[in-house]
Image 1: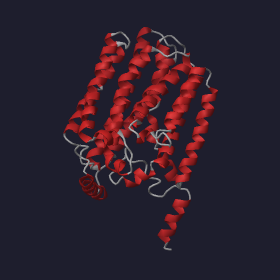
Image 2 (image 1 turned 120 degrees about the vertical axis):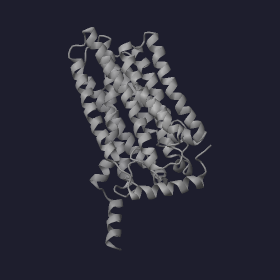
Image 3 (image 1 turned 45 degrees about the horizontal axis):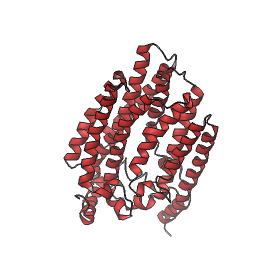
Image 4 (image 1 turned 90 degrees about the vertical axis):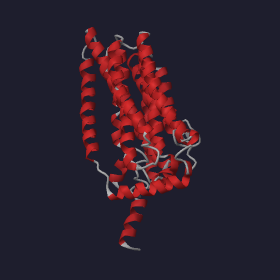
Length: 372
């Protein structure tokens, strides 16, 4: 065997720390400080004191669930990731297993360990309602790709992600703080959940050729490209219409509605890109900005909601030290997001990426799934 062959075999059978870290896809974990912080902020807005201990538990729980999902997905999505020749930095998995940097069993074993950690955190939660929803969160996250349910292989993956990221995480955080489920929180979350479903559909649009080839039936695979685009565009309108209706009804404070509505500018940009066919030919260079901003669109509207709730708390002159603590979290997110933008601006197309794009065009033509 050649030296390179020996090296490859060793990587597949063994463990590389860089690959293990890549499996974690840590940049996606930045987002979940926002919904957790939002759930806590809404309870403070309603007059409940900030309990730092349970805030930390809620945040650690979200991180553990998120990491578990990544390691679990990498294992059960390996066939789909191997078939994906037109991945972007935001779609197609981390590529650590595909590139042989870590043995697949390591990814699955890590997912199991994180599941155990998540269950221990659930067991430590102080109320029955929090424990039940915590357990539901873990189950949905595990079966997102794991058999036998495999939600993301049955047209339910997009809804599952929205239910966890824009529903269960902030709700569990609120329950840990005050054992209450505020109507205001649900009203704020509903429009963001609609946009989360649309965001996941955009991500899955980029993977639709390889997904269909291995029997992974996401919504774009099931309904086809053209209908998926129509549905994504409609979701942008529905989300901001719901937000405005809830503000008129008095469920969402206007000081929260205003910054959330400002993010509609990103919806306009995304709609233009989709109508111009940025996702049609699965060309990585064209898809990357769209999936990047679709993902960060959801982050920014939740960020805006958190900022609005904190501003309303300050205007009311209540909340004690909570606005300072949550404001520091929000400021930290803003700094890291700015760094992410800087990194994204430095990425330039390479000849290797162009070759992948050419291959992707050919694959799309052969599969015949670009225009349904």
